[in-house]
Each structure stands twice: as C-alpha cells, then as structure tokens.
Image 1 (cartoon, helix red, strand yellow):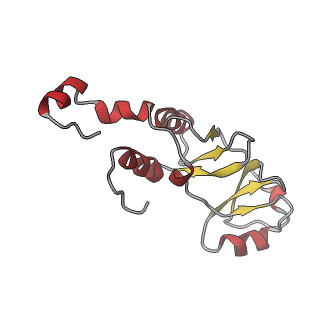
Image 2 (tube, rainbow, N blue to C red):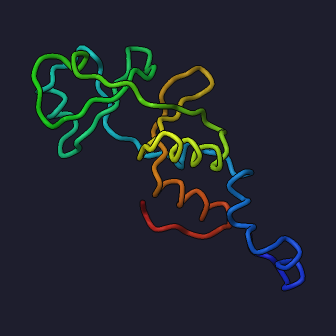
Image 3 (tube, rainbow, N blue to C red):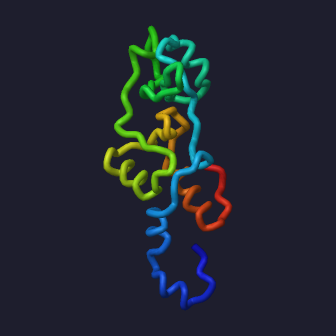
Length: 143
C-alpha cells in the first residue's frame, strides 16, 4: 500500500491500489447498518423505526436476510412490500468481488451475511472506499 522506496513502487506497479481489491476482505467494521424490520412489522411502524431513512432491511426472527422494503409510502405489513436483493455476499469476500457484484447487478448496496447466513450489514460504495483506505493504513473520513 505504501512502498518504502521508488524501486519497490516501480516493482509492484502503478495499478497496485486497484489490484489490492482482490486481497482485501470485507470486515464487519466496513459495513453500514441501515434499519432492520421484520416482515410482520406494520408499514407505519417501519417508518417510525427507520426515522428519516428511505429503506429498511427485512430480516426474520433469526436475523436471516429476507430482502428490503422502500419506506416511501404503503400500508399493511412489511411482508406485503418486501423486495428481494439482487445479490448478497459473505463476510470475508474480497472487495474486488463485492465491487464486481455491485457493477454486475447495478446496485448501491450489497447485503453481507456471516457464515451462518445471518445478516450483518451492507457494503456501500463509500464503505468500500473506506475499506480500501483502511487497507493502506489511511484514516478515512466517516462514510
């Protein structure tokens, strides 16, 4: 991330920062945590839980990922409005693979689960950038 000499910098090449995406893994501290709601939550209660957020993640009683719900209106239960995520990934996935998923599925976030498939949070472009900065020892601005 920070070559000690010009020789080392030239040896590893100018694209080393981009190549680093393949070896840096998603960690729990890299994730954003939007509000979560259960499928049995009423839409009005989901609006209150999420406060000013426009989206909430829907999880079951075991914290398994079910999808997401837009909070721009609607009545009834969250389950009636839940959408599936286009993709998800696991903690420990490389940033390269996560970025590829974002681009392939044209999404702003990718939900991240643990080894038991329990929801942990979401990786966003800002959080991905912060993870890259973490990998080279830089202090990133709060995403």
